[in-house]
Length: 102
Image 1 (spheres, rainbow, N blue to C red):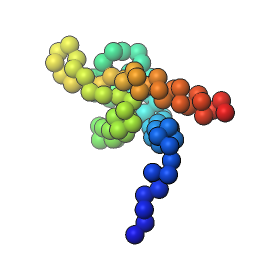
Image 2: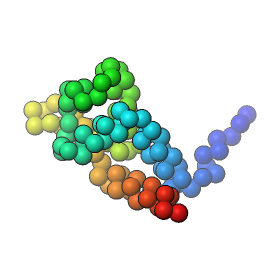
Image 3: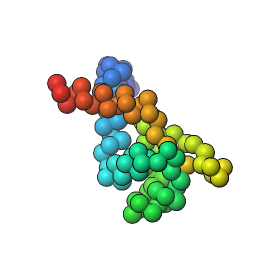
Image 4: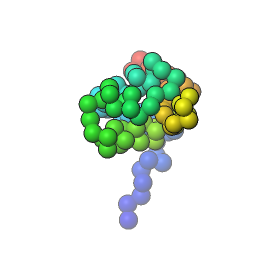
């Protein structure tokens, strides 16, 4: 049986790959840009900005969540929305700049 090779890579390399994958679709880039503009964004706001089906948007949000770039948050009206995880965003930025500057 094959052994997972992911353990052969450093934590930075694994995080970099996860973030790189997360940035690999224009819809996810648009979602991240929208989340930079507002503290918390509703699903409806994302729907109006991303020209995809609800299911596709949910999938993109799951990918961003798994990469720790976003998290769920409550809107003022008590509904659940989404926001950037600032610490993860800064760490991802520093990691990518380090890779690209090398």
